[in-house]
Image (cartoon, rainbow, N blue to C red; front, side, top):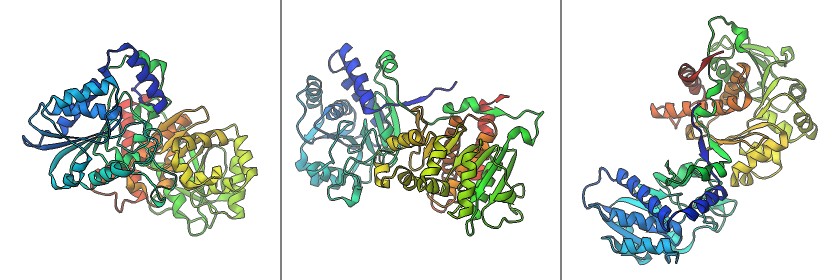
Length: 515
């Protein structure tokens, strides 16, 4: 079994930290954090010449204490260290000891009056130690000016624990719902790398987090494992380890029926491409047979993927795995097909227009909730907002809670799509997906994702594994295409499909078992 990647909430981390502090000498955790951060800084500075300028931003809390430790250690190297004290150092013994060590070093100390000079200096590295996970108000005043100044510079930024201004639980920039459109919206440091302490945080991997945190490294500070055991993570990051148990080799003694059927329902007039993309993804993700049922006039066949069987929806049987929603529309025929799917015992993937129809119809909602067979819902934030009767801004304000609420309300496995897609089930399991990039923000990529999920379900995967794997593979394909220079600008949904196929085969060969 591959290891899991835990994500801990602020409350969980606080409990672990308190337990560790109770049994360690004063200053131990802060000193360890400073050592880990200084090592990360040295890695970022490995190509910088001797005497290169390093700016360390020191805030008024324990995060500032960690930054003081970094200043003391980097000042022992060949680099010129400037420590900018932004606010008063906390009176805690740990922070005061760190301050004394930094003051006894070669670091040059400045206060916020130094801010106008910052843009005129060529910095080899900036270390952000302004605010940590305790920040609850938008960054304002001189701190806001400092953050805005740093974000305009062209140099590497290393954030300590979390980029200042980012919420560690939600991934939002700390501030009111409404973001940049509100009068007192917040700001956050944009880092190239974040070294986060004790445990990884969900906010580094979803919503604004991925734009601000950069590459994330975790320093557990040698805290005794018992403290993590007593405070287990409420969330995990999607990795191959989350779904490796379902990866499988194909048996020689098999046939198309061994790999399951997928029925895709959608394709109203003007939207035939959606079920076609979904069907192509399902075929190339391993389904034995794929049928596309069209609400509008069914094409004779798909010339690019002739293996895809195209039929009027009336000729489709909803008995195995059904993906409904891509290009479905809102006609009476679409509504009747959705009602039939919900009343069936099929393993069901609900996407796009199927979600909008459910959101608008309490009878459909009740039918969904009472189903005994698997249901998977894949909303984007606006669809999620309709399903919960709130605004999309409220969904984005706390994506983890929104996904959890959807899972409980509809008794379904949820994929809340977006940067750092959230996967949730009614049993309180939460996974955040780290793969993917802005290339996925284009028409048709959701149809491809729905097809991958359907194909894995048809092959007998457990629904939880199938959803995590599909979302991970989908994002991983986009990352591979961007690495090859084929995006993110102009990346198309159909380009993802063969890359997903290659990745699924590679992983199955590496980790799969014959079943």
